[in-house]
Image (cartoon, rainbow, N blue to C red; front, side):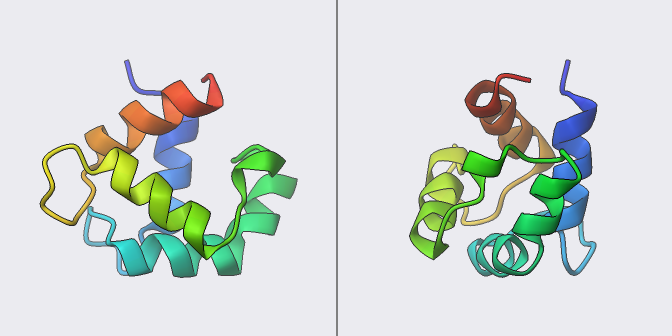
Length: 84
């Protein structure tokens, strides 16, 4: 089962609300919203990194290499990485 925290974080990062995440979307959203999301407990403080960290997270999550993240791909990674 995917966590509610993963859904909350995915929705916060999905800037255009199309149900998928692009690399630029993840980088821009974490840059703009990361500290606030961490303060709200949506993402661990250590999970808010720089642009390279966001890009690496995207690459790790993009299991099928289509350059977009589905919720399932995203949730599988963040649930494991953040211990949800």
